[in-house]
View 1 (cartoon, one colour):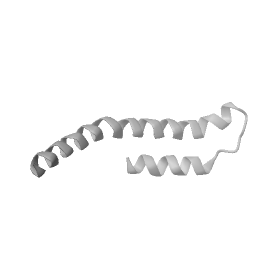
View 2 (cartoon, helix red, strand yellow; view 1 turned 120 degrees about the vertical axis):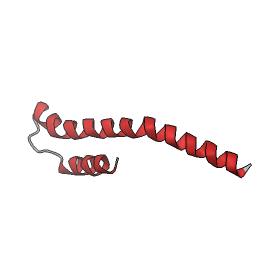
View 3 (spheres, one colour; view 1 turned 90 degrees about the horizontal axis):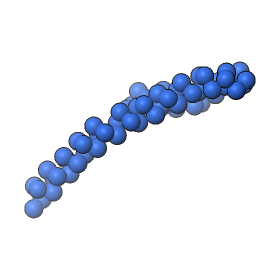
View 4 (cartoon, helix red, strand yellow; view 1 turned 90 degrees about the vertical axis):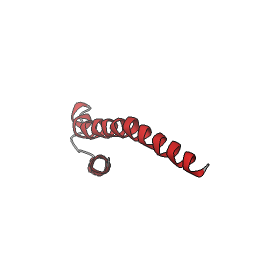
Length: 62
């Protein structure tokens, strides 16, 4: 019973990683681009360095 549960959980985690990690990477990559380009487009020339820092760190982790 436990072995079947472990196999199912491993398979579930593997599929979840294959689907979710690239999505998270794309989202934070888009956030990084938005953090650079957004302020310039909307006329704010100060770039939010905190958002860039968080997005870069999370992208590196993902």
